[in-house]
Length: 173
Image 1: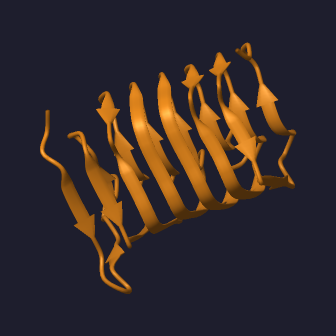
Image 2: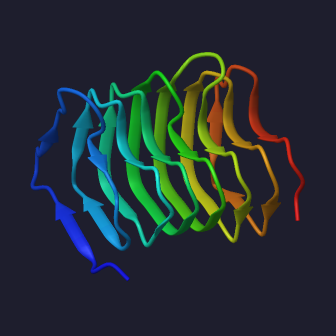
Image 3: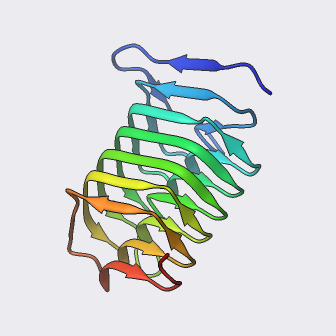
C-alpha cells in the first residue's frame, strides 16, 4: 500500500500547466488541498485504480475536465471544490465508484453537448452527493450510466442543464 501524501497549497497557490493535467495521481492515499488549477487538460486525473484520494478546498477553472478517474475509484472524497468553465465533464468516474463522497460542490459552465456536471459511467456503490450546486451543464447535471447501489443525492440543486437534471441510464439497486 502506498504511503499517504498530502499536497497543500497556501493562499493563492496557482497551478497552470503548460500542457497536460494539473495533477496526475499515480498512488493511493493522496490528499490535494487548497489549490487553484487553471488551463489544464484535466485538473486532477488518474488512469489507474485509486483508493483514498481526497481533494479539498480546491478551484479548477478553464480546463478540459475538473476531476477524472478512469479506473476503479474507492474511498474518494471531493469536498469544497469548485469546477468552472470546462469544455468536458466536471467530475468523471469511468469505472466502479465505491465509497465516493462528493460534498459542498460548485460546478458552473460545464462543457457543451455530451458533457455533464458529475458522471458515473461505471457502477456507483455506497456513494453520496451532498450540498452540490450544478449550473449550466452541457447535457446533464448528474448522470449514472450504469448501476447505482445505495447512492444518495441530497441538498443538491441542478439548474440550466442542457437536457436532464439527474439521469439514470442503468439500474438502481
